[in-house]
Length: 327
Image (tube, rainbow, N blue to C red):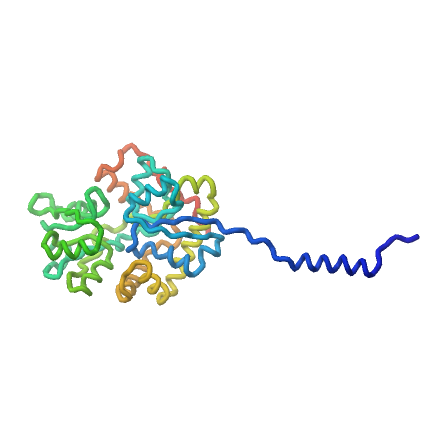
């Protein structure tokens, strides 16, 4: 007797196969990344908000949670405690790595000092850098990048005598403190984001004088950091985060309206200020994350000048480009 199956049995088997094909495919859960900003009001960190809103990180299989801190030190503490995976901060935070912080600089956000500016008060007659000779310049705190920028101004201008040297005055990083310091005569100028100068002008409390790139040509200013835990446990997530970040930067370059709106939401800058800093700074973002050798050299020189690291430190161990796209 010949062996085989009936037509009814065959249809039953086929029907089962079709049903199996129609079942939903299991979706792999996105990797969750906690990403911290050292402070809120930095245009250089806006690609994070763009990437979250417009899906550049989701496309990389990432669920990104944004956390805003009140300074680079607080961000480094969070990474050290395992409460944050990725950090967006100033290049100056690389000095913490030399002191043992469990993190690594993995990409450049920008090596353009144009992201920093010098403001003056409403009654100031200053028209350029030469007018800052012997003046009091506000900084966030002593021993920081902003204090080094005052020292560098003195060095570039050759202001060596007590009467000529610009003097750094610590006032903190709060824009309201800047306005108060101008009004009370505590400072003659202040180093901050260019957006601060535009906001001062809107308040009739001051104006932007120059951006820092007028005397510091290249400086590894803003950097993306990754905690050693995520680097070790999920290096692919770091690589995909960077891919999403630079995808977001490319989106920003061709979508001004959307970027300005997100900048206003993310930083609290008024719409007109957000539009002005977009026009001034958008082209200054790194598009590939590679570190600038001259920018790093200037940054590491500042570490030595500020006595943040010993000259014997191997600075090549503070950063890596191995997570960047090879394209």
